[in-house]
Each structure stands twice: as C-alpha cells, then as structure tokens.
Amino acid sequence: MTLQEAQNTVDTWIKTIGIRYFSELTNTAILMEEVGEMARLMARIYGEQSFKSSESAATAQHDLADEMADVLFVLICLANQTGIDLTAALEQNLAKKTARDRERHQNNPHLQQPPTD
Image (cartoon, rainbow, N blue to C red; front, side):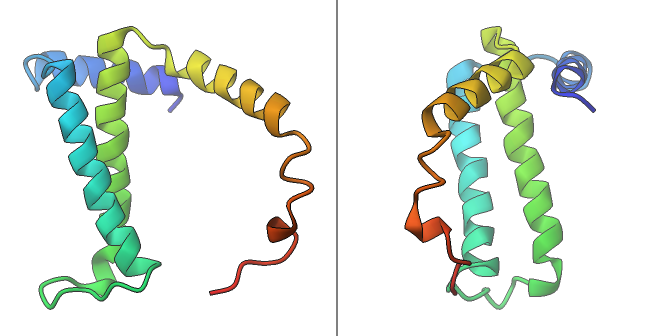
C-alpha cells in the first residue's frame, strides 16, 4: 500500500465506519497518547524497563507493531484533515535531509562503530 493509498483508505474508513474525523486538536492529543504507548513498549523491549506482571514479553513485538500502526493511522488522519499529501511531504523531507546531511553522518565517529548495549 502506498502512502496515497493509505490516505485514501483511512479517509474512506473514517467517513463510513468512523462517521467523521475528530477535530485536529483531538487527533493531536490522540497521536501523543499513541506515541506514548509505543514508547512504553520500546522502553520494555529495547530499554532497561521491566515488563509489569500483567504484561507479556512474548506478545510485546506484536503489540509494538499494533501501536506503530495506531500512530500511523492517527498521523494519516491529521494529514487528511490538514490537506497534507504525505507522499510529497516525505519526498521533500528526504530531499532536505539528503542535502543537509550528505556528509554530516559520514564524518560522525559515533556512527563508524557498531552500537554497544
């Protein structure tokens, strides 16, 4: 699925199953909530934080994928609401990063070695 297809699919879902979009401000708050849920899992899977007794490390990767999809869904909602073409925005952003960072990361000594735990 392309970004444009995703934007169209989410728009159709919102207008049929979801009835209508929440306001942009509400969706921004929901996005922050979803990012927090994703961050909680990242801290447990890849960080030093322990799982709670009610959580399962066995299902954490599946849960992480679901949380990432929640973040993407709400971000797409916001893009649709504000008239942002995510394909064009990502292409422009990558061009900006390429021009700005073409040599910056090549000369970063921290990136020359594999990461340590």
